[in-house]
Image (cartoon, rainbow, N blue to C red; front, side, top):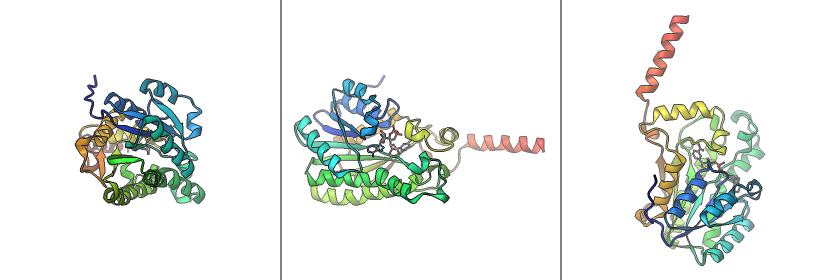
Length: 281
Ligand code: NAI
């Protein structure tokens, strides 16, 4: 049973991207509220039409405010309304937003559709810049606030099924560093990305071959795959005062996957395949 420690007592924030109970943002909302924070939940208007988020809003005593994260007008209204609702400036933001029309339509990386590609970059990467630029313009974040965006190791290494989301994540991580520099000097606001294990969610399972890949990562990682709940706790820590001097980082939250060459379990699986192939053929 998870024990909360009131790590975020008195803090206020916006959580983007809770679609259903599997979403990393959903678990993070539950976790930060258990830690004493007050939040506003936001998602794209089309996602809100599903209605699921209202269950979470009730549980978290939170208001839901629609915003397409690619629209500066929507984001401005969201930050203004959030400050009004929560009664002052904010202390944290979770950017948990990703979508690739090329992935969704099964279009191969080598045959990409460039209009889709630009949409992928706008939704999954530039949206972080837009969130930060809006927050800065409205002076919506207190000093020492913390902004976290979720990312994936395909930004550094090639994973074939990840398609143009790899470029989006690489761009987003770079935006976190660049904006982190400017926001740090301007207002002591910190910006980091958390690079999470494969997680069974709507966005995650949209990637081709996800199930096999999920098991591969599980076998490769000394601690196993990090769950959405684990990720939520890590984000809560990143929003807390215990990580005040951490900024412009890409932090791997992946059970050790990123620094493992190969695991003994995978070697044994490969040996079995070789032995069977040799026997059959
Ligand atoms: P999810 O599908 O539950 O969340 C993605 C969210 O993005 C949804 O709530 C969706 O409505 C929102 N979204 C899409 N377009 C939007 C727009 N224009 N404006 C505002 N919101 C929009 O899936 P998950 O896995 O919780 O994804 C959250 C984040 O974690 C994403 O950035 C994803 O790339 C990242 N991530 C996921 C991993 C996985 O294996 N599931 C692994 C590593 C990172």
